[in-house]
Image (cartoon, rainbow, N blue to C red; front, side):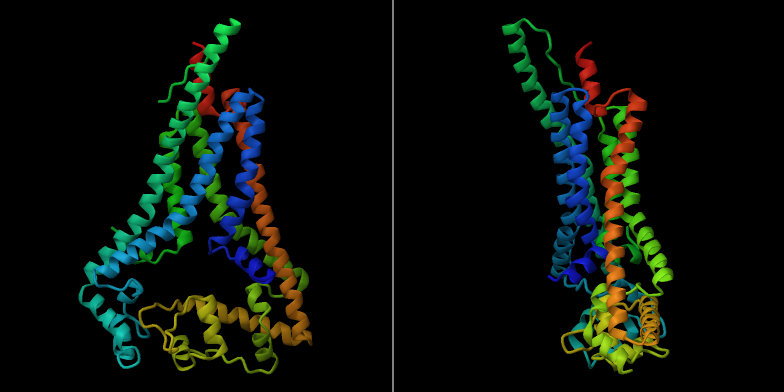
Length: 411
């Protein structure tokens, strides 16, 4: 994978790649280090216990969060196929309009894509069953990861701490007998709509994050841990799913005004020689009115291929547009306007290749700055703010769930 491909991937806030970079590569290691240092102010044992819990919690959650939904989706798709339906039939097509819909597409593609049309006809005859299957898929793909992350993982983590703390207690008791020191501790632990069915993996991850927050607050060991979990998890949701989009738009808008360069296109597209050549030679043909009609009549055009790559338009192997897939016309239209804006600026610059190179550099810088800033806030600023609030509320530097145990053991 080239550097441009990597930058493109981590700059796409509708994909999971920025989340992987921020979550596993930057946020979790930073949080683990900060947790150890913060709890070391209380004691070395507290630091070890808190760090172990944080490692299991963060990386265990990341694995389930990033991999659980795609795994559940594949399992559900397998089940839907076993029921005789193809999950590729987009439920948005159940709502007919003048350019697309199940009935419309069946009639239009009956001779062009007979196998796909047959799958659509079955859905048309059994709309209710198909919608219920998709509803079940949504519930399974979000509820199971939520349950594992929000309830089973913390319960396992707390139970492990309980076991280790009991062993530590026993060891301290031995030391007490041998050295006549009193320092032992006692441990005690107390149906889906079309929009849902069409949710992307990232949107489902946002849903599971909400469920995870509820689960973590519900399984917290005392009121202070509940308060801290509620604050921390809510802020993490905002910083993972909302803030990066705002930051990216701010950087792109600022650089657009400063450098007079449209940087709203993907880095891979800015680096596409064929795309730049068609702009230079005025050969880039785009829709004038009916987007769907253009995509159907010109499946091999550069714009159609770009729409397939960047706008979710789907074609079959024979380059017939997949009648089972819904075309988001607004998304394609917005993409077209960005291309037209870029092409106009590039031509006016006098050197299209040089303009594209400049745009690529600016866009790449914006992406790296967005990832860096959002990661810093997540990995450093948020934990620091959490620690400050913890100290003010509890009067201690230690993890709230562990400090309560420590206090109860001295009673």
